[in-house]
Length: 423
Image (tube, rainbow, N blue to C red; front, top):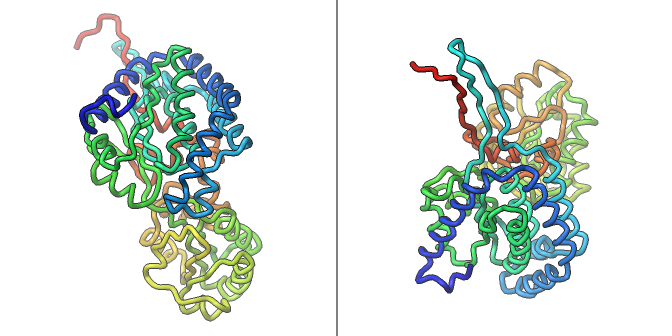
């Protein structure tokens, strides 16, 4: 659907939302077999039309310098044959996951004979706003449709041609298996005002999911008239307890921070119990230096790690997404937990300890979507948790928390079976 067909932007956005709502009502009745057929046929067509997708991607890459993309951003935008194969394989993997729609969460029989079932149902229409990575277009469409939801995709302008090529395939294949083609729609304008129009359409859109920088997420949260599944930042901590295995602590800290710098579940802060600091801080300082990580620490950290710089209050709040980590010596487990709950972003926090009591206290008292005991923060991920695909990681408490997979894109309703009972 071209925006040129409409008198103004608001009319276009309303029409997209109306079509999505209509599609969602029909999609809720589509069988799991049909949804899986759509995923498999789409994967086949993505492979068959790889040249067409790469040509669209070439146009995006040619335009990248005009958007002042960094080398890393341009690389994330690029679709190679291997990456196109990974997109197709990702759709097939979603097809293998259990269909959550219609699942009976729990049921009971009342003394009067009523049978009460709590049944999973789709949310309805998802408005998904995301960064310029073409693979996210296919991933989001797959997880939304599999969970019975229509999706309106508002991707970054930098990947517009690549995303359009993928959505054309997904929409075409949907129609062939009995899924409304309007169940997957890509917003056909880069106008930022379109986002505001969609966020006002709570009669048609059931949930908004922003995935990108903190500025985007705060804008969506401020303007949306429907619920938002979000996380603002990923200031994740590793806490090395007095009873930690220091070899393990070094491995986990390095993996949490260095395995991939620019992701939301990378560690940005390191806390070390005072009783472990003298032995652990010099060795972790050397290990992080080998990965070219800048250390910003408190006074004790600067004494024990050569080359460490002084941390400011802002450093302890920071999500660096780069080669910097804040470090602090914690006098006690209590103070480590208090520090994390004050400065953290309620995303992912880890404790390294051999003390079961300390581990249980940390898990109970740290207010985060995922708490790791003797494991890297990098495991907070839908795939690593066995959820399959995810549409994002939520730091909310309503409606979903942590990796948002198929079940997190559903709600429930009660279905009651009777035999003429009256109250």
